[in-house]
Image (cartoon, rainbow, N blue to C red; front, side, top):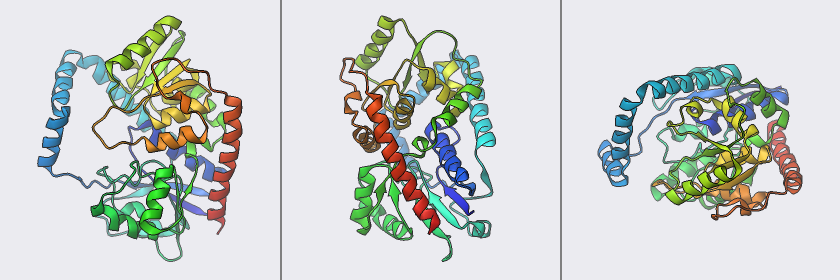
Length: 370
């Protein structure tokens, strides 16, 4: 048995983050290890206040926020209740399912004595190495590990396809500090090789490593109410175009399905869903329409009809992880084209999943046993 510390994003309002954290923990616990997730609350703004204001004015987000605030004033009661329920749902999930360290660290930390107890640190999964996030820092490479402690990454993601020159040294130093590297997408493997000449194995997201009964149990025990009527599920992190929204609406209308809009505050019922509610919504949906990586993952896990949209956003493209996912399972036809695609042959997908899962677990086990 080993004592393992997971270094990941502890975002208490992001579905994919909470579920991948839980999944990796469960895989490691089932292998017989003691596991804690490191509470890293680093916050280092990557833009000056002036730059953030200019950026928000250019992309319209500032105006959008003002509009949203005015809208909230009109329908604040339902939304505030939904927000409170959502926060409670995420908090309950973390408290009930994820074992976190009693000590937290941030950009000002100088005392790392608590973390000497770990035999191994595992960085990942999620976009732990995305330089655009204010939470990203050198701490995401565990520089505080001593010589007797191993540091590896499992399905870590950069979230982007290239690293700006000004960050290259941070990444080089950090990556060279690792004993072994695995990433979530091909673009990440390429970045590692270009910066360090090291090889990084591409592995499955932790959510695809656990047995299906783990997710079924989570869905079945969730108290989130989905009602009786059949529904389709939308989950967009960007803003779908009007023509895309119309396409989804017509799809639901033709099949007499209601529409659940996960992640959209106007859908107050869905907005209050926690990570377990997220899983329940995917398990019971008739179809999914999304631009989210983990929405694609859970669509595959539950063998659903789904369509993937290019994310409409002013941020740098994060499509590389979706590209790798669809390519791995030979399901590029799931991309949105404006017409319904053929149903996915999940018999073939399961064969690929079984092989990829074995390879990913082999990598994880081999690194733990060293």
